[in-house]
Amino acid sequence: MNFTTLLGKSVRKLAIARGGGSALPGLFVERIDPNFIARTLAQLPKGIVLVSGTNGKTTTTKMIVELLEGQGLKVFTNRTGSNFTRGVAAALLGDVDNHGKLDADIAVLELDEAHAVHFVKAIKPTYCLLLNVMRDQLDRFGEIDATAGLLRTIAEYTTDGIIINRDDPRLGTSKFVEGIDVPVRSYGVDPSLITMFPSDDSMRETDVESASLHPATLYADDVSLVSIDGQHAVISFNNKEYPVDLKLKGIYNVQNAVGAVAMTRVVMGDELNETAMLDSLANVTPAFGRGETLVVDGTECELVLVKNPSGFRLSLKSFNPAGYHTMIAINDDYADGRDMSWLWDVDFESLSNEGVAEVTGVRAYDMALRLQYDEVEMSHVEPKLATALDHFISTGSGKPKRIFCSYTAMLALRRELSKRTDVEVIR
View 1 (spheres, rainbow, N blue to C red):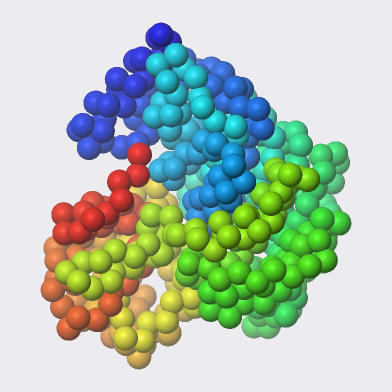
View 2: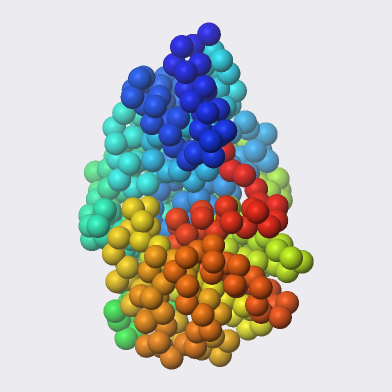
């Protein structure tokens, strides 16, 4: 029996029994055995896929996992969305046996950009998927050029294959991968769709189209989104077009799906079953809190995670507010980022017709002030999440409900909603 594993599993069981966070057992194991993650992941015959970037890590990771499982692989992943190294260690404790053996073929891990840099210097990923660079938690990451530098470091340590979002102004240039010898592939959208996926740069430009275009490098093996109509998309690769109907909502998730397809093709190579891959993609459901739909008192309630201006704008663009009872919940805890000034870079006018029923969270009044400037009517402001949720659910005359929430607000609201309805427990 492995001593580290035994102690770690004991701490994990205790943490679960006390309702604690998913990362605590991982932090414990990192302290007593710094080589635990490297030693355990070294068992995997197909290596490690690392997913990083500002937006979309959790959902894209979930997609890749399900696509690879559809190819017959056993996949290990840090399913809770705890994307620090301690989260990976905690997830491993849940999957290894008492002897430290991991029954999997490949690992697919999402990692926070900053923590990914420390991870790759200790454990080189086999493949990496780099999603995007946007302003997010400036108090942690600094400006976006610094974040791009973190992703460049991930690419430098990757051994077998790199996939980049060619539409990102900082990732999709030849300069970004200059000097890197590992094969690079790309994914992106057709130029006719580029204005639907604005970059961080385009927010301060009057001509969105010209701001969104940049000299992207289109690599020889590319996956592209050809068209999109609601949840119906057409994806192209190998000079063929493939239609797919997605269960996932949100145009950003369609873009993430293209990246997931690109990674699956790299991992599987000539063994890829294209039909199985597309069938798996059509059946992926949202990751927790990322467009997740719960049923509360017989009415649907959607949770939509928002954590930076670009992500919030795309969410507002993706989800029609007509006929919905809407709440916005904004916290400023460490995992959210302390600086909420980014809310002023989001256009909330799309909410004007229906208004916002409830505003809550630590930064409820900051959010309320921002809505006032866009002349969005608010019915109720209550900083306490539990109190606000009770009021929100009790009003709305049977309308479906939607909550836009920052990360820690989303976690807290899921806990509160679990008292009312079935909520998937993620461990």
